[in-house]
Length: 436
Image (tube, rainbow, N blue to C red; front, side, top):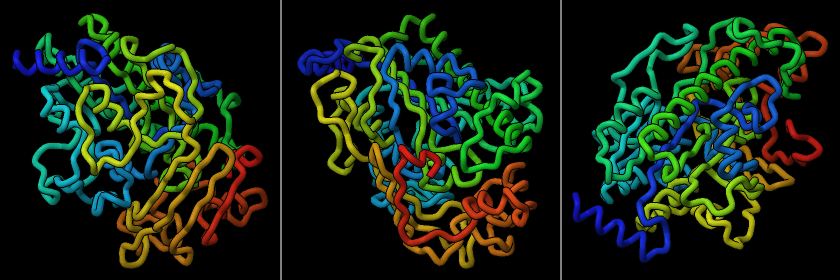
């Protein structure tokens, strides 16, 4: 191990990077849209950890997931490839074939300690892809807590990170995946009000009716995002106590957008535009910047490898963000690519809703490959693996409100936005129509 560390230090010295390999703490929430952090302008939510990382590092205002569905998005992040290159991994409830290399295993081979807590690569089956360990790394789940609301996981993510860090040698770099199950549904009804949040201050997205049910549903969701943020704050405190904070690349993001109609499992911004902030005092040049170029989350894998001085495999087609971190004169990225195949299999025969999108600073173009299918799943629950109508959309008070009032004045438009069939092509000017 000592010889390996010396070799790593030599690589970093000759490459002109940090003399000591950087650590990586990757923090990913489950179902959080871009708008819902303090830094991104939400007037209700309190996210001091995200806001600090954005303020002391680089705040990315146009970051997009590769797929608005859990497993495929996480597969793209790990492999640095778009989902249409990943075979079975392009679908949820599938697998990630072992032939697709991940940044975690490459860093482990380079001497990094790796691990994860909470939700790593999921949901899916490992053995079917020839894997024995979660692609995010070995799991740490020893520590539990009494969650503030019954809808939340009892996993103490921050304490599990502390357990992991206690096992890492002082001279060994690490790469840890801190993935919460929050704010995935279900939520405890009334959690927002119990934390003294004011429904009147909620910003209701234009894709929903301005209704008390929607406002309170959004409040309950924001409470769960705050739980994620508190875990990050505790993890950062652990790093600071260990003296490893400044040479740790801290990334905060989400796998895709919020669990609401016309958001999660859709290519619109509410489903694909995600928060992203990166802090690394010993590596970022001119911290405190805002980056407005368009990036995909799959760009993180080559970024981590380049920062660690590890050669990126040819199969990894995403683009490293190191030029952005180092403030080099690079041409701002002018587009992001988003895709979906199948989310929860809620159509006859378990078929999906294949679609592709190109997002630029001004426009969102969507190609729906099978427009005769129901985008949110079949209205008849008999065709859904989850046995619920429009099963691509999670059960929620907002969804129920739209379904129960679909024929009422003021609701039909929102019902159609959420559930109706869509044309083969869609084009939106996001400046004039931010809700698409």
